[in-house]
Length: 226
Ligand SMILES: [Zn+2]
Image 1: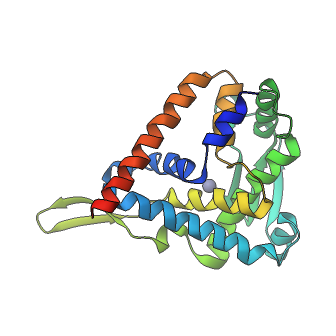
Image 2: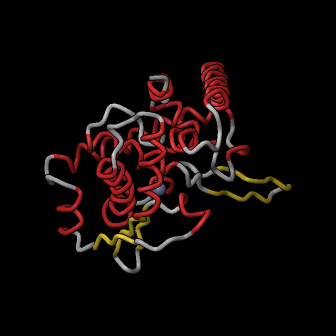
Image 3: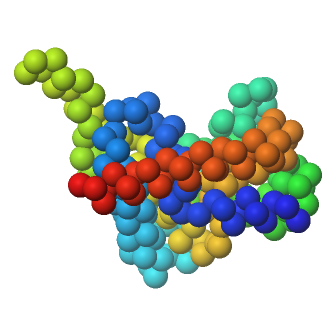
């Protein structure tokens, strides 16, 4: 049952850190601001889940109310397929769910003996993530627009500011976790997938989590020095 250790280690802050490091401008974030981006994005995700939890019984009901269709795409997309999971298309007012990606994920989890991550559960988690993006567009505004922009370069008086767009995904994952009341972090599904599909082994995964932990600890130090 070694997958349990991975799930246990993938706590909210570590997974938020993982998301942040995937942002194109991660290296431009001042070290003492990392905690700010993590905390604020998590807060937005939790507050949004609390706000909508009492009002709707299901994600589907919410989509119906907002006149957004949910479509299941059953096409094959080859190698890159697993990157396509769900997608909220603003113009078409549609959330597209990718059947074959979900199927592949289910197979990978089966390989690891994780039977609680079946097709329906994976579907729900990915749908909840997209519903958060829909709520951002229709109700609360984009998470990254609510947070500070980062100065990308300084050349004399010239400054250029950009948002940290990955903060939206930090919010979306926490929203999914809270709304569905699941004990594990939705982003751990990515790591369990690449492990179960044999793309990387468990030790590599643990090394990566160690690295993220170190980055988190350093950012704590930096914030307390300030
Ligand atoms: Zn997203």
